[in-house]
Image 1 (cartoon, rainbow over the protein chains, first blue to last red):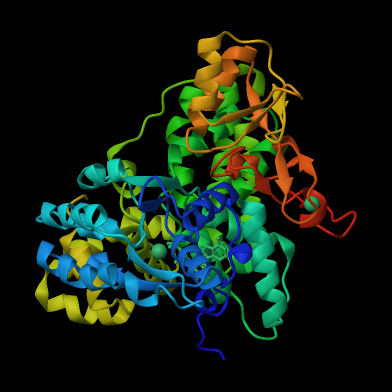
Image 2 (tube, protein in one colour):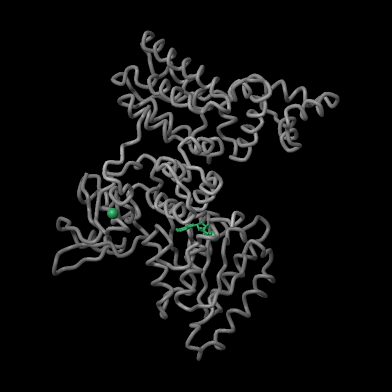
Length: 409
Length: 110
Ligand SMILES: Nc1ncnc2c1ncn2[C@@H]1O[C@H](COP(=O)(O)OP(=O)(O)O)[C@@H](O)[C@H]1O
Ligand SMILES: [Mg+2]
Ligand SMILES: [Zn+2]
């Protein structure tokens, strides 16, 4: 069973098992059950991984609707949309007398895909279908702000989905752990849930990725998560970091922050002079910061147990003089801006490269990024040396392309 | 901070126009019990602003625990800082249900 994807294995088939978004669920079920719908179409929208698709299938199942699915992402033209959709919408009579099936529902999932750049036609076709059909139509989208979908908003009932709450996700993870006989530290589940930012799918995927048979899932196992986290705003972390009232608050904040350690360290270092205008306090804070840096270096990619000292020192640096706190504007020098605003996949690539450098050259990821990467890029651009170097560092072709293509340094 | 239970809460008398606005924004009014409740959540953010305006105070909605059904405020939650939705929507899991062991130690900081 090892190859089963837990997100599929544990995909709820009953409405009640779809966690969170109770209000949205109620609205949707009301819409589905109401024969005199004011609008024939409904659009479920909200972030990915919160159960939109799951809910539609579970509800259809419970209410005996037959779903005619149409993948909007595959649909590129009005013709195609019409071809797929029309049979479904004109069938409705067929099942009229069947007691089992209440009727067909047309389900267009991920309709944001239909609003690809070229074709306004797709959206127009959908609107036509909505106008001309009898069957209820369900649509789901991850991003309803897309300009192209705007006309759709007028012709359907909108139901908004929110990110799923952390405690609800923890409960879901717990339940999966029990069914999979995975032992866990509660903190580990907390970390996974917090890191998911309300995306149940990614939380379950992370859980599966981190658990190993016969091993207890520990907090330490989850540390790798922050290396490939989502693009949370560094800004929020900094804002809270510099405003903490005491060391415990700082520690707590850092403990849960999903910002990458090295980025955080640099950003804190840069902004410290703006936080402490008193030079004595500033020196004190920098002392802690350099301690943190030392630990960060020693952590490398193996000694994760040192991470708490890293955090401890960062927390102390934040709480040297809580009374003196006044809001200030953060500075973010170019190099940081670059890495912070990169997409997750680019950051993951860089992280992986830096880890490989770290392993071979016995340096921290931070040093790898700041000192090695710029040179490595130049060296890799010289054809002759490139292959041997890439091989030695065990870089993948993708990583080499990425490095040589870097413009920023 | 005023904590409102979405299933029923009182408001000071409001003018007719305000009252209509509240209904439009999703409130239901039970005139016998003189209680408001939330019927539709689609304009919840506007509704919250309007309620804050009427009550001249920040408001928060109670949460209902999906496991034990009690109503509780988010102030007791350990994850408020990371909560992607603050006190909306209205269902969550209370602390007791989340950590069934009685004195499960708060995470050690260092
Ligand atoms: N609310 C939820 N309750 C339980 N499981 C969920 C929920 N949301 C997502 N999941 C899990 O994540 C997977 C993907 O969810 P999905 O419904 O496709 O999300 P969406 O359509 O909102 O992107 C599901 O198979 C399920 O395992
Ligand atoms: Mg989906
Ligand atoms: Zn409870």
